[in-house]
Image 1 (tube, one colour):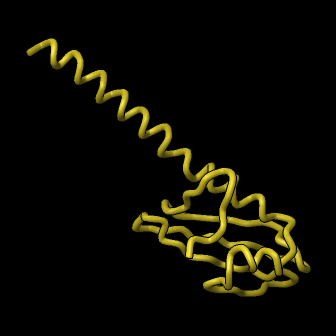
Image 2: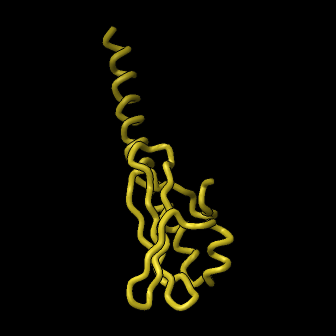
Image 3: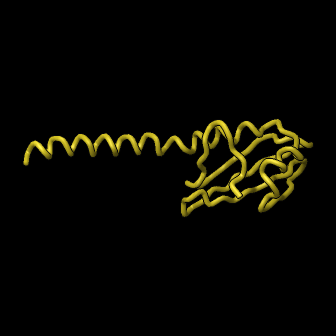
Length: 108
């Protein structure tokens, strides 16, 4: 019986460590995948992400907000700042902000 515990405990620790390390990487990957849209002209951006769920203006900037569930109860809200006709910056929040590094468009 002791031998079984010696095998199971390290295995559980490895699984916990693996899920913790790679589970936290999702938001980093999301940020990297969304960052590629910075510098894109607004019409091309809208073609990729679709119409925003919400938008507002403040000064010379227009803000486009997209809400996604992403499989998490908290979901994900990604907001892009448009200055002139280009995506200037973005911000996101929520545990549902997941994506891979190579591609990201809005999940419809």
